[in-house]
Length: 121
Image (cartoon, rainbow, N blue to C red; front, top):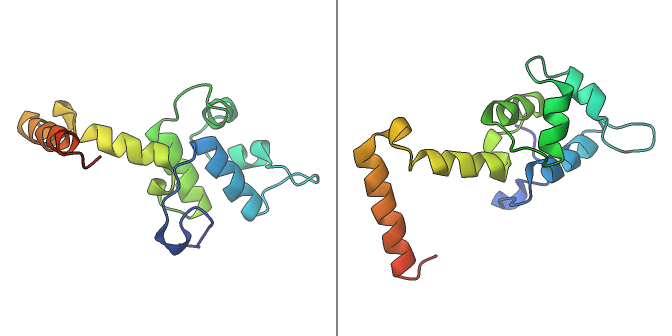
């Protein structure tokens, strides 16, 4: 995968999806003549993501869906975990009994609460 500013030197990026995406588009020169991200052109490269869906996610007008992050990441050649929003979704899933089962969800909750109580967070 190509290196980009959001993952250089093993650093995690905690900025919102739209901010990171904007920087990645500019880095890859997916821009208008004025140097701004070319959202329309990029949206056309995403077969299963409509322009309005991308626009609203990038503008934080609605939460970005994991499938949108996955499509964007694939098109840009980065891991979905490049985006903090996706990492948050992955963490939330570990607390969801429907995703990991009730035993694992409760174990994750207990571990998280224990870390909070011990001041590790």
